[in-house]
Length: 350
Image (cartoon, rainbow, N blue to C red; front, side, top):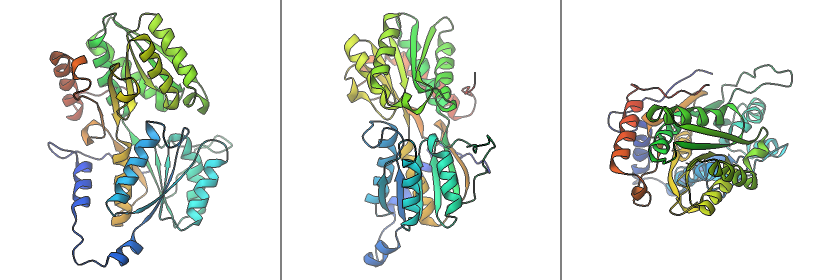
């Protein structure tokens, strides 16, 4: 695939600005019924955990619903999950005349590649795309009708790592991942680097719930791992674990320690205990891809979003401001500005 990094506008995100312009186009003089018939049909196939996961899948749904609510597309949701269910959903949507099928999650990369080859007239996008391999272990070249969307998660993890370290009283923080995989490793590595940027002597405890997709849907394991880390002296734990992460949030509520959410604002999962949430604007990516389909500018390749594009960040608002002193906020914002200006690179590999 041809790589392309979306570059930011000065002082604002190019992607966010484009979305705002698309929403603001007036409908005067149009035939409403004709427009409705011409709207692109979008299918969204969810990842493990499905709609209502309070995280990744819900973010994708928010972007699709915003596009539909603005009159830019019609949207149909489908479950993905594991086994053949994802393939079945992808094929069903492609056969139904859908213009663009968006598969959510890196676990969809192989199945989406297979189905995209079967339906060359249909466009496909994979959120958190990872180059798949076939049954013989060979890399599968993606077709021209598929775009791989990825994020620089390590940048957001770096920022919340610095925030965790600056907020820790024990100089020991924790990370709980879902499935051990290259994607979740980027969260772990970025988090640890951010911690050590501001606190070289801090310890980072690391645990994963598993090495299969089941690691993303085991709240009991997440709760047990987080409670173990808290008992070992960690007073802030960052989770990147899908549904498993809800167990981590529960552990924070029960223990009275701090937790950091992921993907979307998860402050409601542990009121008063959520130091922040690392924001990964899946909604922005999904709406952007839908806009490209509607504008006729869809193209295969790769799109990457990060801090500079306004798609990666962290929550700071009235709910968590009492937990973050001004000097801490200033320090983290300095790091954020440096990453956005490409003066600082957050590592993603061990």
